[in-house]
Image (cartoon, rainbow, N blue to C red):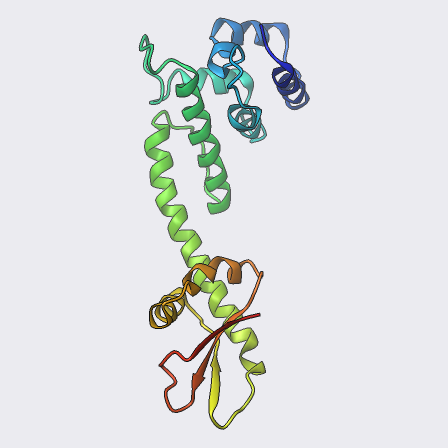
Length: 212
């Protein structure tokens, strides 16, 4: 095997998820599992291919044999192509599949039957996932704005605007020439609150950008 300690750590974790038999072990040997995982190279990363493989195995319906077999039927493997039948090809397969499964989980959609055109399905799902995240961000910004609106003090000369959309963050950033638009994710995650102080006479004109 010529593997280092990280490879043995991987197989320990692998066995905890699926106590595989001698037949399965022989199967993965026959299907170039060790070379595809890159166990003979010191550049092999436990937190790369190995972690993706383990993450995939945690999903219902997946076994070691199913993952290895599906790789050889996927669009990320080309038979007899030495440039693609390699650790880097297998790494791309694991990365795309692990990411696809995670997105399907967030979107609450089924990943079965497992497609062979993994890359194409992954990219299409990524576009859908991006739209999903943006929608969730907008909903959370509106929620935060409404939640704190009652705490806005009444002042004769100034007012406070709590942005309720990412567009308002972008507009504020353009007016102030600052990076407030990059704070959207932090607000959505509850890490901070961003608000705009405006002169009452000019409620749409930026005056001061503040964070707490």
